[in-house]
Structure formats: structure tokens, C-alpha cells
Image (cartoon, rainbow, N blue to C red; front, side, top):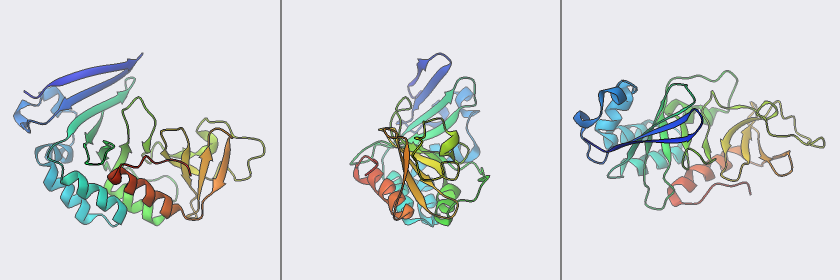
Length: 224
């Protein structure tokens, strides 16, 4: 059986890892199989085929490049993660040639409760979210359920902040603690946690492209 280990990060926070390098579906404990969707089970049995299909069907080129790089990996780590007693989430973590080692969750069919830029629709039609680092570190693409207006996320907003924090939705979190945000109109902004302010970006799509390209080339995504 592939080695399985459980790691606890704190009160009520658990993290289960199934190392899948043996590629033996029969060796996966039944309790873990029950937590996986049919699509996730298929990806476990043949990740190269599934991630190649995802790459070919993805309409957003930067994400397509990441998925293609994952398909070229010889192996991956299957990780099941949850906060407190919430349902487990299934991730496929790949050791890319240049690093880092992103953990990707397949799309679950969740739809946005608010309008999002068209190119982001292509992203979320393909994947649910990405964890750039270990689960106890910040950094990654938030799911649509996690994405919320910056004003309701919790981080402080300075009194002299000029952009409306209730209109900009955080959706990419950096290792340093900043957030890239989108506006339903297609505009974008960076939230700087050290100053509590939102700063407009000239091109939201360019920033998102930089994020996905960095996952392939090993460049940590950060607020410029």
C-alpha cells in the first residue's frame, strides 16, 4: 500500500496525505476513496491523461501551460485537507521542474455568486483552487467560495484607502500576505497588507498571467 500519513496543524485542523508514487489504485484505503469524486479517482489512476485533457480543453493559455507541465510530471502527491470538521478537499500536488510544488483541486462545479471577468471564468471552469505552498502557509488561487470582497475578508482597511474595498474581490493570496483582487467590471487591484490600501493595476489579466507563469518557472508570486 502507498504510504499514508496524517499531520495535525492545530486544534481541529487536520491534513491527510496519501503518497501516490506507486500508482496502485488498489492500495488506496477505502476510507480515502470514499472522499474522492469520480473525476478525482480517474485523475489518480491516470493523472497524465486527465491533466493533458484539462490543458487541451482550457481556454486560458497561462493555465493551460501549468496543466501541461503537471501532465508531464512522472508522479504527484494526493493530499486531502480540511479545516476543523469541514469536508475534506482533494488536491493533486506536483513537483514541477523549477518549483514550487503547487497543489491543484479539480473543478467542482461551483458557480460564482457575483459577476467575474470573462477570462477568470475560463480558469474556474477548469480548476477549483490552487495551494502554492504547504497548507499552513499563505499563497494560492482562492476558490470562488473563498473569494470575497476585500472589505469583508478581515484585513484592516486604512481610512485613506481610495478604492471601494466592498467592490474588489480577493482571489489570489500571496505568501507575504497581500491579495490580488478583481472588480466585476474587469479591473484589478492589489491589497497591500502593510498599509491597508488597495492600489489599482493597469492590467488584471497580466497579473494573473504572471501568477500562472510563475508556478511553472519557479518565480514566487508577489505584489510588485
